[in-house]
Length: 133
Image 1 (cartoon, rainbow, N blue to C red):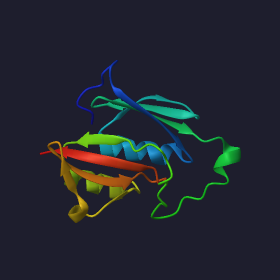
Image 2 (image 1 turned 90 degrees about the vertical axis):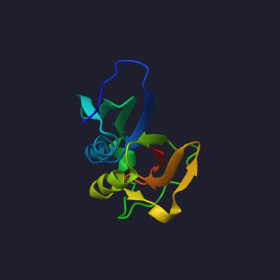
Image 3 (image 1 turned 135 degrees about the vertical axis):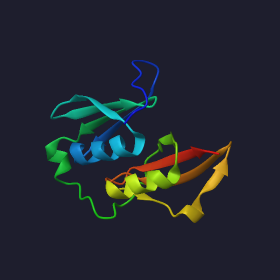
Image 4 (image 1 turned 180 degrees about the vertical axis):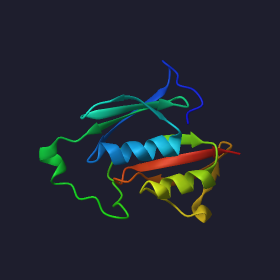
């Protein structure tokens, strides 16, 4: 569960999804977010200083998108969201349980007082996770 649900000042992300339910479950479990608003078109998730809106891709476009297991990385994106998490080992369990992927532990690096690993959500969106050292 989220430690706090701030009303303003949180970092935000809007991610478009073929499966709002599946992608929301990933962000809820990996980042400890809570569902604040839920509709057919989207879910608003918030907690721990983050706000994530998981928004449905219109059906006419979603039909053309194939999600594989493991997901194919969407590495052609110009953005890579980065999230600070309490524990990368616990994160790995949440990522795997919700259909995402995380690079092996030995590929972690350190920068500015954080241990860092890249991974992706269940639809292949590339993410970075950091644990404070």
